[in-house]
Image 1: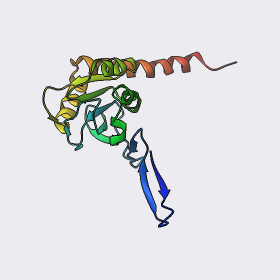
Image 2: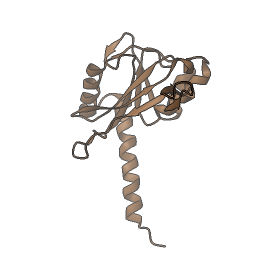
Image 3: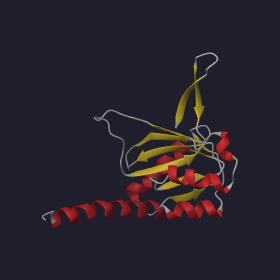
Image 4: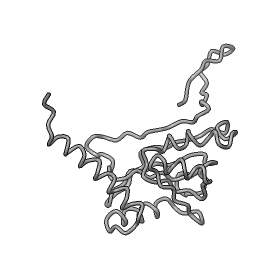
Length: 175
């Protein structure tokens, strides 16, 4: 969501960030695909520690993970201009994370929690800052062993989606 504009006085290109923020999706070779089980976001300003309130987060690191590995797949950033309106900034954040199963943050207001749950994203509030790599290990163990409610629910939801397509294929597409 970054646009280039030209400064007419100097003729040079300058970068300006749109009000809603920017997203950087990471690409990888097709021979080394990202894990596809769950996508999880972490509110962080340093990309290594969960250290931000959901509504005031400067950015989110989004990982794809399964029981064996985790890979950073996207960075979502919000410029300071997007921090002005309290309620007005939530829809952009919720929309940016709608493909995630969960978002880890230090805090989230009631309105943010309600909006996240409405799009199927489980907010996870931490009491203290935590290293993202440690949290990724915990989530991977939960994927393998089960017993963590939001992880189990996200896996069931994913399996239900794939089963739905299998049922549609079995029904056939004849006219």
